[in-house]
Length: 519
Ligand SMILES: *[C@@H]1O[C@H](CO)[C@@H](O)[C@H](O)[C@H]1NC(C)=O
Ligand SMILES: *[C@@H]1O[C@H](CO)[C@@H](O)[C@H](O)[C@H]1NC(C)=O
Ligand SMILES: *[C@@H]1O[C@H](CO)[C@@H](O)[C@H](O)[C@H]1NC(C)=O
Ligand SMILES: *[C@@H]1O[C@H](CO)[C@@H](O)[C@H](O)[C@H]1NC(C)=O
Ligand SMILES: *[C@@H]1O[C@H](CO)[C@@H](O)[C@H](O)[C@H]1NC(C)=O
Image 1 (cartoon, rainbow, N blue to C red):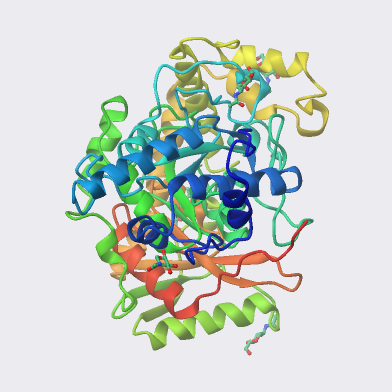
Image 2 (image 1 turned 30 degrees about the horizontal axis):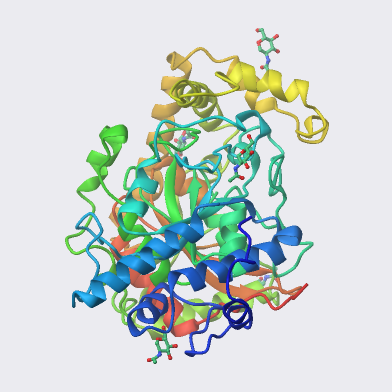
């Protein structure tokens, strides 16, 4: 961790107090506030990075949200500050260091990356596993290249469910060998969920401005919901998966996690787009990217006229429970804001779609995982392990550090037994496509829905099988104070209307509160 000792004492003290001498408030600072602070001279990127590094130093021993901080973060911040000073003295209104699309939008803004997103710098990329420690990637992940073009500061790597929860059926519950046990900052004994565990915890506990997570089935939507932050799971292919430790190109997607819808949307604007190294998917999805980007959909009247479906089978909370009451209130609020709620909808074969062990998902994923992980490993310029088989052997050789007895590695073993995409896998993949086409896709078209609303990540599998997007927004706090969220999902490319709905909902409800504990 970079030392704070070299900085003037007065700067450090002022920053640690949470509000600086120019009135800039660090806690809960939004990207818009940060950008304004940069412009009006009340904030520097250096001061912001110091604030987050200090939060990480103090909170991480308890929360385990971060695996590594970037030893280069302060230098990147100083460079951003110097660039800003220079551009102000040249009288330019904004920095144009970007790619032309949202360019410079995150200039000087510290971003934390899930540990399965590759960076070619001093940071390791390990998906939380000791097996990949010391591996060297050839280049930044596609999304990281875009973040750097937009001027973002790479703050570090976030903890995660090891191997994005694809090592064993019971999952690792927010644990990785490298990062330890991630904790929910609202209720330490509650699940933080995963697999983008640290990304969500860090955003919630103000340990970063924003973070990136990844999702195959629920890995952004679930931790964002349970840690009271906003998560966007983009349409598959909207964001490049190149340089991301994979599970399956059919479902994997990279998305932002932040404290507000606007923050997440600013990051989305920065990371979407075509990438040569993930050409087919990013080309296919690039037609969904609106001219002018996504920020234009942050409309306070975004619920007006929206047709929102409430599918059966999700809001099954007992009468009188906090969740039951709060979700009913939220549905009423949506109506009052002009949305048309269509209740009592059935998603065909819902129980089949929600059963990954029996609907073909596990058959497809096991084979796809082995193929794509081995491809990722073979592209590394150095790695102590070069195949799934070698990772299995590594875990066998390090049973204590890798908690082999508690967590096991059954999915790895099943995946290692696969031999590519044969007839059974092809049939499983076609079956999943059909379930999605006849399920949510048909329902949304027939009923002309803009979105469906569901709790937390309950519908993540429905979205996953169709490569469809979802956004989760803080919805409330349960009996013990454990957060829960509300998720708006839609067809591929529906990000604009989902953002309108999510933003309007957030602005009228303003549910999120920062966690109040102080160790
Ligand atoms: C500068 O902007 C920040 C918000 O980002 C605000 O808190 C602060 O008061 C502003 N300062 C001045 C001098 O306008
Ligand atoms: C990356 O891992 C190596 C051990 O292989 C370690 O020495 C180094 O400090 C790690 N990088 C960071 C930024 O923590
Ligand atoms: C909950 O309340 C509704 C309407 O008030 C009622 O129809 C339903 O049976 C109740 N469910 C339970 C489990 O009590
Ligand atoms: C889906 O539902 C239809 C109609 O209920 C049924 O005929 C079909 O077998 C189901 N598909 C699967 C994969 O279970
Ligand atoms: C893998 O295949 C071998 C040989 O067919 C079999 O004995 C073993 O049980 C399989 N392992 C798993 C986890 O499916």
